[in-house]
Image (tube, rainbow, N blue to C red; front, side, top):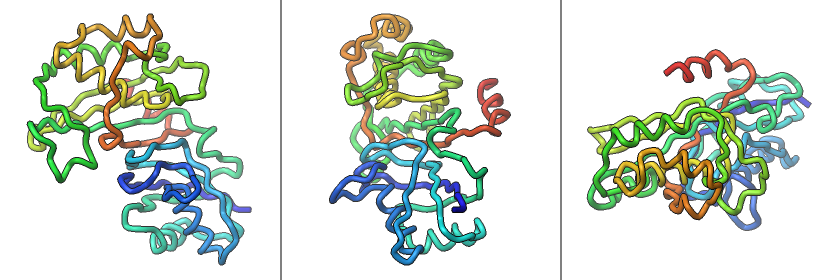
Length: 260
């Protein structure tokens, strides 16, 4: 059957994560229900680039599925969006190579994390940012981010729920932007893969470094000790966004990121 590659954005607030679960509203389940309706009741299985947890958002989640009819990519985008809820949108669709796989063909991902710095929790940001009201030295965080670059064993930054044994990952870029207008810190991490809750644990550690609760080069120690308990905190799911998924053919874009 024809295979389709679709990029989806969603507000994760009211989803119980990406993966289908019985009696739960999930991203995968919602997409499958819409596609099955398009197919007049014939079930369509959706495969994602990876799972996002409950409350985590996506700007560029990628999925693929096989559909029994030939549909122009633009028409598929329009048809699917007409059936999706308002907290989800298809932002791109295309016909990939016949054996394309959204998960197994991934070569890199980029995650964004937003931190609100107000003294109190902003009621209009509570579902879309983490919150850290304590003093921050941005220069300390910028120095610490450099220690993340390259290949490291991220055992200290993997939540216990993960099943992947190999904890070695390569970070190509790790940046911090200060949004003064919104009073936010915006982190972005691009790497060849990320462990369960890894970005949220990294952000929690960086905030402690910025606040002076940790040594500015504490990542070096945490890589060595390989102990999740010593990394301690996990930033809330609400601030995390899957920004982009990279595939073969995107190497030039990745190279540009590595140069920044």
